[in-house]
Image 1: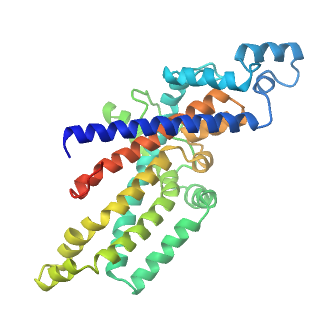
Image 2 (image 1 turned 180 degrees about the horizontal axis):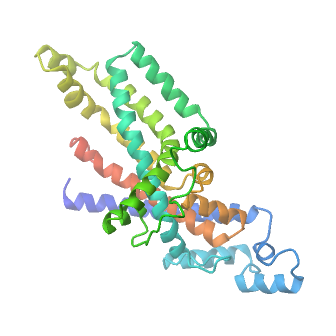
Image 3 (image 1 turned 90 degrees about the vertical axis):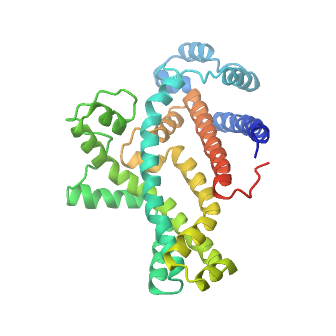
Length: 339
């Protein structure tokens, strides 16, 4: 693909991104205003007088017709202004910069676990098709997909934090461990500052939520890898390679896995984009200060700018991640033309 074709493809995807974000903004705005409750009443409390509530609603622009409110919100988004939180008074971009690093660290850790275990598990299951290893792997993956995240999280907390006391039950860092944020990424800051205590404590706090969050991506990646590998290993060129005396390991990895990776990479992009959106259940169970918990609190508080800005940011990240996945196809298979 030439630079001109690549530029045209990126332009098309960016236009599509704009259309998707426009639809999401309209959907979120409409659904959010259908939720019972008034942000002014929530902010002022039940003892506020009607005059005080009306004055606050007027100051926040909540007295305007919904179409005008939406157009005002859309105008700010076009200027890359997501507004200000009703309750904290902090701009939404600052709130995102505060909560986003924790979610990204958790998503990267969970995805690393899923990839390092799920893909090899799927390859082994495909090579050992219909044998006991394959059956155990498929049962384990079925359990991983079916197991409720909140139940698994509580089970891990009870087993490893309460009973064995090996790992901390919640939070991102112990209160006794001092941390001076630089980038907002705890593990990266610990490495930059050479702070082994923060690195070790942060790693221990990361284990349980990352393992909990990784179960569904791990199971789905394992099943997808097995399915594509079984199909790939039955192809004629695989039989030809074996007939030529090529080592079995080389056949499986070089000829089989490489050609089976396209659907696996697609699934990885979808799963990673979902994880970056913030896992509300996992973050809530482990008191993880991520973007999912932040949006959830915004819904409970009827903080319209937080929910609208947060969801738009998550949607944008999801689409961008999948754009990079599409671009990676040509690296895996040069025969694919993205246009």
